[in-house]
Image (cartoon, rainbow, N blue to C red):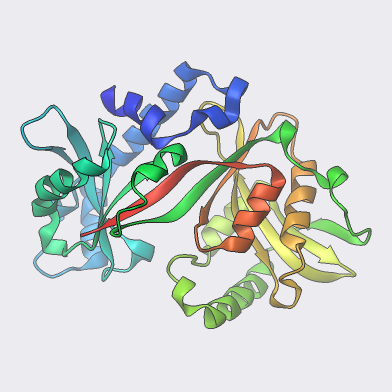
Length: 310
């Protein structure tokens, strides 16, 4: 329970949701996240990861999520190896602490955790943090952020009724899998223009996008019968609340820079069922357009993914 309690304060800024938050439900949600993390210790999952990454001198048990004591204290972290964008050449160590990490703790964490994973030659330590605590770390040159988690109370978000909507813009539900070639082509163009973003902002695979379509949460944004962009989401509760998670908002190359992403999201919010309480998403810190879109919609940052260079 210490891991759960600390996460509710250190990892998440729950104040952004105010009256929606029920702390008992929050704890149950965080417990389920912890259970999902420990699922990685199933032998078949560890074996699959071992074979997939095929890193020399490693063994199956190296992929275990380990409970590691930090020095001669009552501080522990759950730690496991990860690879940025699935790239075996970019390994890092993910940690979940049972204490509020201070900047002064980082060196002790590295000292105690690194030996368990040195065979991977990890480049960073990784953890998520309540965004209000970021200023405690930002002066360290080895520290940087990668992703931000945004969330918003749906009834307080901006729908199309509060935007300067273009009268001919509309949503069009995607009915077949034919969209994926168009989507893939647009993403390929994006990665050609932004090669550094290929691993940080990867294309969603067709299995995930099809899941969105099956849940009737995949739409084109259309203007004069032309595809302006696409939005993909899935049903995903969080903190015990009925939620919709945005997997993708992508604007076609010829329409970027005209705030169509804001319009696409606003129209999408307007059609959500009344039962949906929150809208949330993860956005790369370098993805300025998507960050602006989330903020414009009324979403706020509630957690930030951090990396510390080893």
